[in-house]
Amino acid sequence: MNNVFVYIEIEGTVVQEVSQELLTKGRKLANTLGVELHAVVAGTDIKGKVEDQILPYGVDKLFVFDGEGLFPYTSAPHTDILVNLFKEEQPQICLMGATVIGRDLGPRVSSSLTSGLTADCTELEIGPYDDAKSGKHYDNLLYQIRPAFGGNIVATIVNPDHRPQMATVRSGVMQKAVVAHASQRGITVYPEVSKYVSPEAFVVKVLDHHVEAAKHNLKGAPIVVAGGYGMGCKENFDMLFQLAKVLHGEVGGSRAAVDAGWLDHDRQIGQTGVTVHPKVYIACGISGQIQHIAGMQDSGIIISINSDPDAPINRIADYVINGTVEEVVPKLIKYYKQNSK
Image 1: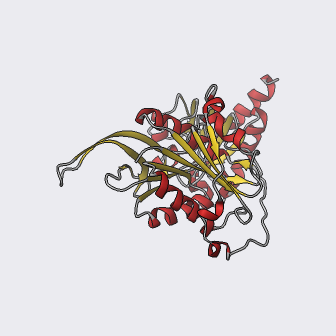
Image 2 (image 1 turned 90 degrees about the vertical axis):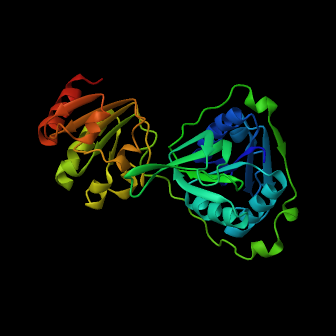
């Protein structure tokens, strides 16, 4: 049970950002364990086109499966690839994105290998574990940390006896970073697809594949103006869009605001939405439930505008403005219009 594996998602020949974020985290986990970081990618006509997007993140060995029928993604061939490769390589950890693909592929692989899978992790660490029932002590287990019971607690889940330890992580939770001179040491292998995938796996064929670009760049915005149920109504969100325009930022919101129909679902920030890491996060009328905080707590500067001085979000805010959004936000818009370049 040796190395750390990351499953790489691609769109055509473009590696998805969530996979690069997981490679960065995987590199840190591998360093802690003193093992190698391996990656596996499968697609059609990708040889020589994806390596430079993967190796710089500290990958020691990259498995590239290139063949007809591997893109667009379908469940069976990708499951065959991972299951048979993992039987050979015996990894101790496997990480995937908590995406449409990862949520389909992860359970299939873990079920076939009778291992465990923790979905939507917000943090991954290495540590010991003492089993009170059996009296056994375990070293170097993967702590799979995620909110549970509707976000009311943060659970740390371990898998002592089955391998690989599998976890999915949503895009934006981890931060990606290339490793200096990493691409000079990593090696790439090109296994024969037919040795890993049965002909029956290709019985399902995708007739049409369409990807629509995101309408906004909430995840990559340096400034995020977010509104909660305390905004009062949908019309008040117009103020937030005005403020965001002046600041060259993006608008987001809490689940309560989205559920009320005041904001589009793809702007939801939190445990069941998008995770953001802006330089400045302005929370307007947001109480600060743990589900929302999970999606923005790593922001550089947090500013809370709230009429409730005891709102939970004020505890993590760097600056608190006590007042209603109707009073405060128009003043901010007026000030920044007059003073911004």
